[in-house]
Length: 184
Image (cartoon, rainbow, N blue to C red):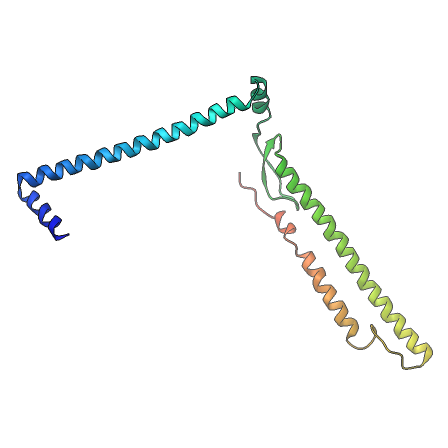
């Protein structure tokens, strides 16, 4: 390292031999850089030409190319307003299949969640009815019957766990999608 430092200092002081060596070295580096740039450009062109050739060979006719460009999605400039199934989306004609499937899958998931929520509410109602039935049975028979739902705190414990699940369903992220802002 010190040898190169001495060589550079000699060249800056005016040593003709050292200046010529450094000039040759600079030209060598410039040539390597130019060669690397040329390789990069040629590689990019080769990839582009290969892709074009592949497209030409894969399409059997120009009618397929026309059909492909005719069905290529076009951005209309409008936006789909946010709903519980999707946030704000740009309007594209024809609408891509993956966006349609996203909305459809979220619709199905919402239907499942609503069915599950209805089942949980029905279970809560059944718990209340069972509790009232056990309590009424104890009063009418005047025996110390075992209770599963009407003893102190048991109904509250059952109801609390179901209410927690119901509250999680009510706070689902689909409701936050509707409040997303639309910034054109």
